[in-house]
Image (cartoon, rainbow, N blue to C red; front, top):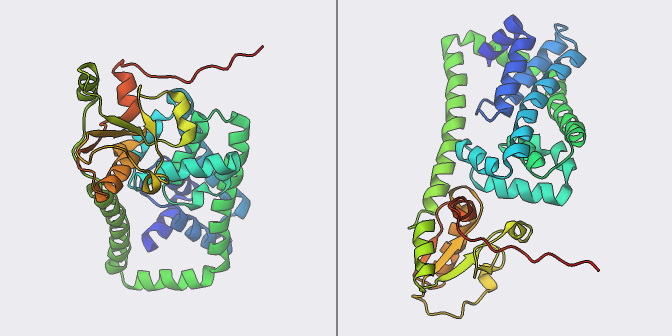
Length: 314
């Protein structure tokens, strides 16, 4: 942290701007500690609170706008790509989506306080068609709350943080190594959690080509759509039954335990489908396979997608 403080003192607003921008773009470079240290410099009279807050908010809005525009252009596909490169567990898409659907744009007020959610919530706002001025208002307020709390806490506890900095400086290179080691442990723990989660859901997949061949040959498997209810309006694989993760434990499949079952979703690494599959396997069903790539891969391959009937208005 002494090194970070030295960089803030030397490069000032540029370092704060760059750190916030990179974190909001999705890199595992936490900006909250930097803002805390910047708060110390406010207490020392080196920077005004308003200027640092404005720089942090502007940087966050710049990165978030990029994700918003990506979501607006590419829809929910960008969420899967974002979660695949993120160190956060793949459930982040589902959790952020649930929060955004429940609260709407006001969810942007709190998403920056939840690791891994900021970039996803911005992309989701674009994909959901949130108006840009509403997005900017809510996201700007959220960025101000997030950055402002860090700057205020840094200012409030500036004497204690100064003492910590002094201790690290006295440790010399060992203090720097300690800070770097803590950062490395943070990144490694996030990466390990993600790998462990993905490994726990590892099982044989079926490709969209294989599923289409089975259907054309008249060997129709049981097909389960595991997406949330609000997502099925985008279309589904013909013949699919609908089941959510919350319903699987109470659902009874009227089939033999060896009957082939194919599950699909619209999430990275087929997370939801794999979780439902695990629960069905634990209940004794044996021939269970998630669909590789989910509904997006099926649609991209040009196969038939069933759509809800349009209501006729008299």
